[in-house]
Image 1 (spheres, rainbow, N blue to C red):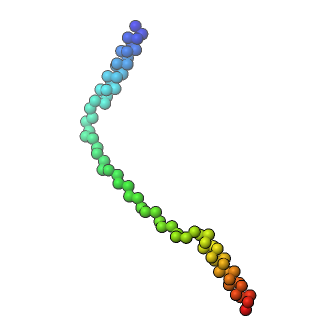
Image 2 (cartoon, helix red, strand yellow):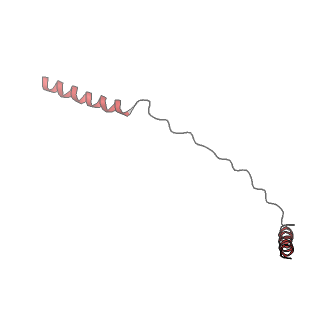
Image 3 (cartoon, rainbow, N blue to C red):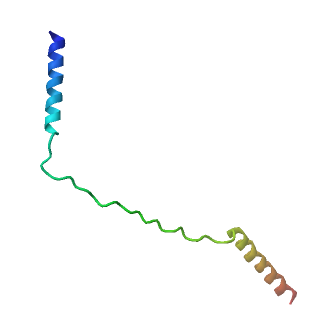
Length: 70
């Protein structure tokens, strides 16, 4: 008896769930496809920043050496 009651309850829930979603009075809404525009990455430096720092230090050392010679 308990199995019959459980099956009857499951069938009733299944039927009510199906009936609740059976019809939709409103038409389906079709959204326009979303287009994602990717911007190109900014161009990086062509040389390593360490070389720039070493170059500036070398230029300062050369300038200091030239000023000492005078």
